[in-house]
Length: 426
Ligand code: UD1
Image 1 (cartoon, rainbow, N blue to C red):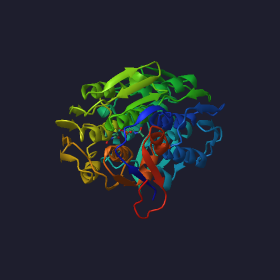
Image 2 (cartoon, protein in one colour):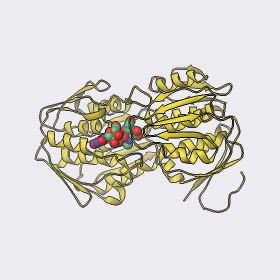
Image 3 (spheres, rainbow, N blue to C red):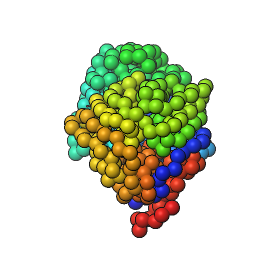
Image 4 (cartoon, protein in one colour):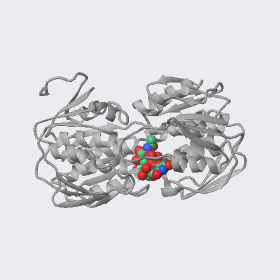
């Protein structure tokens, strides 16, 4: 398995472009399958492995999915016919659940293997299933496959538990072809929900209220493929800014929507960073040792759970004690055991991590087990003295593309090694 080898201790500085958003592109690629007419041209699509896997699932279902350029996808879904999303692909990514909403709406039946994704909690799909049932579908789970059927989905009013992001997305996709109006209450408010609504509306669907807690969807019969640019990846941008901050550097991310990063930037300022926002850029300078700040993850617009591990890498080196509460996923502190190998002092009790900042981390071999926890280990390695080897790079590749190239462009000494061998200095 591939790994990153990092010679730490260099302050990062410079400008770096961000990719399109994974969590936006996944729903939009699935929703492209709703259109029996026309083609969708999606730009700013990142080549993360989760995206490649979802493209393959759609191809297996009969859609034509081609890369037009490095970051632009063309999808023609006229001949979408199959109803089975296979285990070997669906188990790899959480986004495969969106294929349920798509197939149920478009073909009236779906058989999708129970989804996979990062091991950061139990991650059931009961909210999704209850939503489909409320729209009139019959569902059952058999041998690890979710089976769903409905002649035609019927619009309804329903309350989404815990403002679940994936449930909101899946029901928006399904309700777009339903008969009548669907009202989603306690809907997720993430920018990626708004991006999906923009795309669905451009296809001819009628979605109102995305970005608020109540979304209204008037079903239509025949959406048409259309052109859409995926929003920037606020999570990649946040990771790169935190990489700058943890090394006490000066990093500017370009091609971002600064409002999407607001909560993270506020916390960085509280920790002592200097933040400058431009129209499409954000610059973060960390002139000295960061101060400890407390964090509580929340659905948007709260502090994003997907930046919690990277923030903890920063706090591991902060002056003082930080309390970090994870309220979205119940098992998202596994990576802290790996951070301890670098010398971090973190105690985890249920949903809370107490991070006692240390003056210095020292390089060591560590292993990534999920996308964001893996990114946190890379960041800690960049700040640590000596060599850090992060194995399990494939987990990181699910949500970052060319991370090592971007970090090297900012002055980091990092390289990817495909073979496992002796630890080599870089
Ligand atoms: C998505 C994102 C993930 C992000 C998360 C929260 C993708 C592919 N993943 O995950 O990066 O961290 O939103 O912003 O876009 N839950 C249930 N039953 C369900 C659905 C969810 O109990 O049917 C629970 C989950 O286990 C979790 C909480 O609800 O504890 C929130 O999950 P949700 O918002 O649905 O996250 P995902 O869509 O899985």
